[in-house]
Image 1 (tube, rainbow, N blue to C red):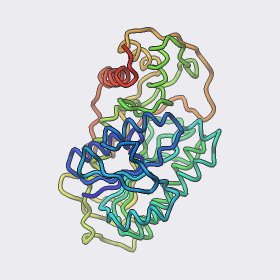
Image 2 (image 1 turned 120 degrees about the vertical axis):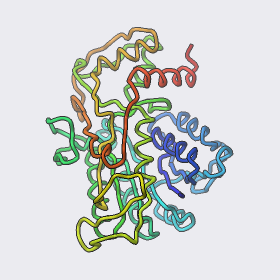
Image 3 (image 1 turned 90 degrees about the horizontal axis):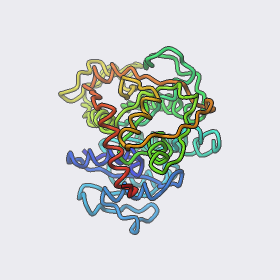
Length: 360
């Protein structure tokens, strides 16, 4: 398959592109390489994919030096003209949109960036899929859409009308926009509500990197809500396996039934258990097993071999006390199996961190 993966300089997008390339797919990567966090980390990821930063030009495709089946283009999703030219030239079989302005707390400081990237950019992706006959679109949503929901584990049938950050609101908007395009234009769209992802090449603004960096350099770590928090921490390899199972669906468009109804049925390739897959679907993708923040910190301490000095603080605006994913639908429909133990995943992360940042 020829697949467009947006956000390939990002944490999840990089790992997904590498996995798909290793499986033999043709992958076109796209990213604007913004400076929301250290661009050297982004360039490091791209380098692993055979993309040399010294050869990058805006809106120009660059061939990978490592993977003959990979090209990368530095571009903004908001640039509809460049995006449409790319779709017209490449004729994608599938699109996985992971590019977005990330970060819950940053959305409070810089809301316009989220509307531009997450709303306008996603609209351009939908329009390009519509105009260039791409019928398989998967995209990143977020556990943050559950907002003020109290009952856990979070289920995709739960109400998601109470977001507490603009970031969450844009992700909920993406789900509604995708549903509309599925209904109007018979594009199969699959939203994946990511829960807290960690692992090698992770984002420096996320807890694992913040904790590892502070502990390694003898600085105190910030522990919000006085440590009374939990997250459905999920290792990157488990996340990528789940995304690949979704991206790799090959739809038999000749088998569409009830195309004028709200829930047309499609037939997927052998290996999926889906019987009556609607064109617009949303799944939780997480570990299905929340971990307390204090246990997570202790696991990082054990892996690094140093104790953290802890600075206990109140809850931050836009944050939630706990997350817990019900991933039963993804398990049932795609055989999803998150099975990386926390100690093993943290061990791999710390090993990468020490190598990348030159720690002893």
